[in-house]
Amino acid sequence: MTKPLNIGMIGYGFMGRAHSNAYRKVNNFFDLAYRPVLKAVCARSADKAKAFAEQWGYEAVETDWRRLVERKDIDVIDICTPNNTHAEIAVAAAAAGKMILCEKPLSMNGAEGQKMVAAVEKAKVPNMVWYNYRRVPAVTLAKQLIDEGRLGRIFHYRAKFLQDWTINPELPQGGAGLWRLDAAAAGSGVTGDLLAHCIDTALWLNGRIDSLSAMTETFVKERKHNLTGKVEKVGIDDAAAVMARFDNGSLATFESTRYARGHKALYTFEINGEHASIFWDLHDLHRLQYFDHRDQGIVRGWRSIHVSDGDHPYMGKWWVPGLQIGYEHSFVHQAADFLEGLATGKPAQPDFRDALRTQYVCDAILDSAKSGKWVEVAKG
Ligand code: SOE
Image (tube, rainbow, N blue to C red; front, side, top):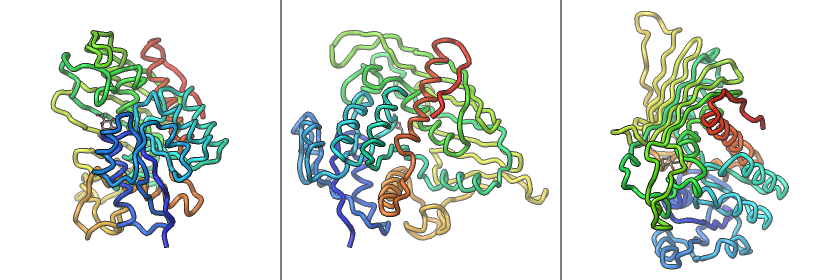
């Protein structure tokens, strides 16, 4: 018998769908002690909440997140709202004793993130941040290969996340769908939205980042604001380029932009070690490229590992060897790991404290870009 875990979802956008889909599928593929129940969805617009509830199978709707948080029949609050609302909701949910799953980035900045960490740790409620790319099987395999020591000493970490959807200067900022362009709602631009993914993966695979130097640029300086109807200054970073030093002595470069014409979501990373290198590309997400210098010379070369066999991470739970899965499954895996963590008492990562480390790196990037100086990353 699985134990029901009642979900209260706040928000109904892209991530509301990705998480709801994960809750619906997870028990079909993973044997778990807990089973998410889509109890209630909350949105300010009753019509939109109702339509979402109908489409995804939520039992009830709320239009005020405070009511949802106070409901006795809700076990987990899932925060899928714009970044500027994460902290207030999470602190209230923790005080009400709810488990919290929060969409990335954790918060607008490190200071806000600290309050969220303090709230969940004081309330001792399970918590997690949805950095889903860790759970793409090829990325999890990269972690396994690194942890097994196959790369040896690591020299370089190189990551990029490139998009092109904000090049049009007529695109407004603010409101549903476009809050990512509004600094008041998002906190930052590509740094918190895209680089945060690269940083989360990097910290997981290669450890702490000690210091960095960054530049950012806002290419379109003014955009009409959807909420005020006026042309307003754009406060987000449209592009960021970062040089960083890891605690293990390796060097990194990170780049992110929404102005790379032709790239829709090109997240790539390459890691070069003493013995071996790995490369991963979100557009080809089921493959891990691996080069091992210890191979016999005449056959040495880059191997393209199709991460779809039963002994690859997570893959034994899906179809048969050779048949691949995709983006949505990374959320199913993260939900499975969270539920597994509840059962075993070994919490799934990244929890709020772990995700705060990414926030500190984001803060350092924005500070360095502003000051033009090399900066130390806050420790935590
Ligand atoms: C932005 O376009 C975005 O949707 C991010 O917000 C997501 O976190 C990323 O995974 C894909 O791109």
